[in-house]
Image (cartoon, rainbow, N blue to C red; front, top):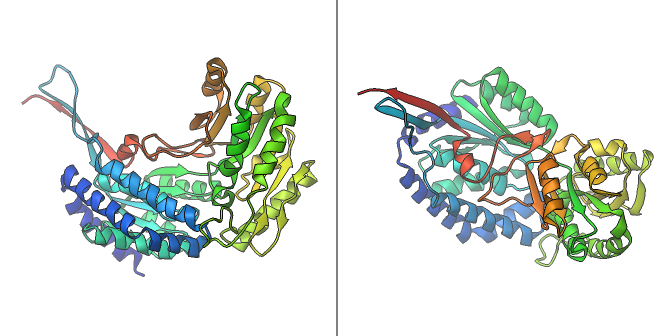
Length: 429
């Protein structure tokens, strides 16, 4: 593949695409949503084949993606020039598309992650070149064809079948003006450094170790029922999954049996069965990494609540470990079917446990009192705080992280401005 030629094609497409009216771009998005809905079974099969997501969750991923696209297809044009009151006859703020934007996307949501970045970028007038995860090239090709089938001009969206070593070449190309990466902290820091060196805009959505805080005044029975799914959906391979369950010590003995019973109902099975809720991990090396982290946690004092049992090259019976403050594993993200259990004596201690990690993606707090909820809303260091619900992404709301979980915003109308140049127009005429 001649990457520089692909970028040149993208840039030439951009010169025309940026002139297409906002409403016409939205009409094409409606057609794109229709393509996804009509082919959701086929696309879901591609996802499950490539990274082993349970097929019902793959179908749900396509449906959620189509819904997101419709949201933008019907959204207010927040990129229209803004008129500002000054002493000048002309005083406006304009938002102009940057150009060719690189997306470096992960395998855990092969369609959703790509489209939630690409759709607002394209609607803003940019064009996209995608570097997908190596095991998801088929998904990348399918998304490119979906754009073509919806009637988008050629090269507005391209899937580049390239490796990590070629990201540098892409970012050094002067025609590329920005990058969005969803992935690990290590990958994010490397790509952000490259983007910064070449003065390119970057958006990072990185790892998380989200807290699921259950206080003694909450509906802890519902929290115990919802918590396992919040952890084990997509086999635990979600950035904003519930990873650390921090329980008020007064309800631990009541909460834990309910939680464990529901947690153990998730057992690995054939991902192509509609009733399967847990599958194997995406790659054997990822399973190796999780097993190594499990042993590391135990070597540093973690206690086994439910053992993490490896039953095949990539599959586990899900485990739970009890971890105390100071365990080195708290500085890492557990990406797979292994949960951390912690307890706290009061709100201040629980808050300290929740914040004492490098990450800050999302946290969930279960309480029946508004004042206690507000305390955590005001003091949790994360991009999202969910109250009496599991953390999840919502197309209508901004999604992003704090601390080492990244920067910038995806989703909502805010994301439409991420890859635009703010231009001030001022004077008299």
